[in-house]
Image 1 (cartoon, rainbow, N blue to C red):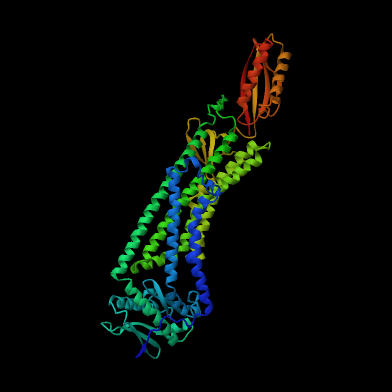
Image 2: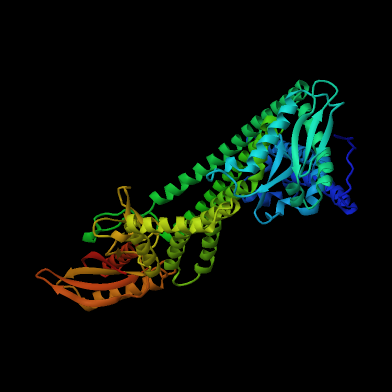
Amino acid sequence: MQIYKFISFKQPLIQQHNWVHLIFAKILFSYIFPILYSLLPVACFLLPKSHKFFALFKIEMHPHNFFNRYKISKIITVIIFSLFTFILITNQTLLALGQTSEILQNNNIENVTQLQSLTPISNIVYKPIKIDGREIFKVAAVAGQEIQGNSNTSPLNIRVRLYENNLKQTIKNCFDADTLKLTIETQENQTLVFASDAEELKNQFLIAITDLDAQIHGISREDLTNEIIGFMKDALIRAQRERQPDYLIEQLSISFGIILALILLSFLISVWQKYCLKKYQKIQKSIEHLKVSRPHIDEFRNYQELTTAKTELALGQKQQLIWEQQQHQNSFFRSFLQVNHLIVWLCGIIWILGNFPDSRWLQIFLVSHVIVITIIIGTYLAIKGSPTIVNWFAINSFKRLENQSYSHRKIPQAITFSHTLKGIVMFTLGCIGMLGIFQNLNVSITIILLALGIISLTVSLGGHNLVKDIISGMLILLEDRYAIGDLIDLDYTMGYVEDMSFRVTQLRDSGGRLSSIPNSKISTVHNFTKDWASIDLRIKVNLDSNLSQALQLVKQVANELKNDAEWGNKVLDSGSVLGVNSVSQAEVELMIRMKSIPREQWNVAREFCYRLKQIFELKKIAFNATITSKYRS
């Protein structure tokens, strides 16, 4: 039996330039990156133009209210978050780089063949041997030798379990670290490694290194044995030290401090979230008030008069879109706080799990899936932020449409498409995120396509109405039958289009009732607020009145209304005097037809009657007028 004398960490297989890379990486990730990252939030408060950054989230920074409790909580949150981030990143980086010698020893083997990128040689497979989650080396075996397809009975898994149990048993035996020796016994096709000390540990069998193990590492069995023994002794001593009461008490104290910091930071973030939620609710009340202030609907099938509360509905729609943009920004910022809340707790938990040897495997598991977690968080934030981007494009479209003659129609279209596009963008981002997760988890593309095929078949069979709704919604948008803000009549219900998607249309009637109608159920649509509206005025005068004078005065009032600075942009033409419409025993009915922009016909008719009454009284012509509005779509 040959005795191996432990030599302190010499690195014969690592070339000199790797040490330069290591020193550079340690300086960069241990000092420069944590400092810059942790001081970034503080810099946003201190820089002169930091208000532009916080203006995105509607955070006010006026001097007169800077020291109220919300602003103080924001500053404290940023400072504590910065310090905690600095400590967290620095500690984790130092822990990772503090294990440099151990990692570099593993790299003595991996630098030769890069095991992470190894492809199984022919039918050879390999698996790592770990102590407390830390990899020592990889063992190999011939694939396909398991019993009846049970992977647990494969030679590779049996070897891994045997060697890891031997290492755990050696650690439990409480060996003397000062006198620990690793000895080897060379046989024809393998090398056995034993552990012993000057006290009770006597030739405890640890592992066996085979020619197959050396083959996947690309070095001889003797060189592989010499490399592994050094790593293994250091790992055993470290594992024993981490199970000592003093070490565990120290880690418990650190973990308790981490939990207290997490609780304090969570409280401050929650205060900030409540403040943002109050602003969100305030904006929501403004939007609801704007919706309530829309014109109310009477029995319009009999062409009764509409009472109008807002004359410029397009401006109201624009204001609603601006408030919705503020809502989306507020919602995105609250989601950003939630994600930071989650990340802080996740980092803290990972930190705590790494402090104890029995839970370190869970830390390694979470860290190994950090890409999946990042994809999930990134997709969530992208979905939350997509309505803000869509609304931004919609608001910019107002600026291009405001000075155009057809803006009264294009503006509702822009709003409708923005509402519909939000759902499409969210669905697309969700699909991209799921594909990214599947790819990272090495899920076969065949399984993904098969699942998509099954889902498509299920939708086509069980969701036939859903497909019809989506197709009908697309046709409604493309044909511009109606848009958000339009007043429509669907025979069985009537109201303003409050919201619209590819699947349903929501109408709000005069009683405040919200009706959700599947798009496939919509056949005949009467749109009362599209393109233009027609006003028919029937003016009745006495039989002895001068009809020529009366017709001339009617035409005069129509021309004055068309040329008026206030009303001219609401009247599309100067009116068409149709002449005498009917004659009865007591009166003669005159008729004039005028066109106005949608939603303004009743206001135009009222103003016309007001001016006509004044001029008829001046000319001493008695009359009464009846107003009828005919909409065109």
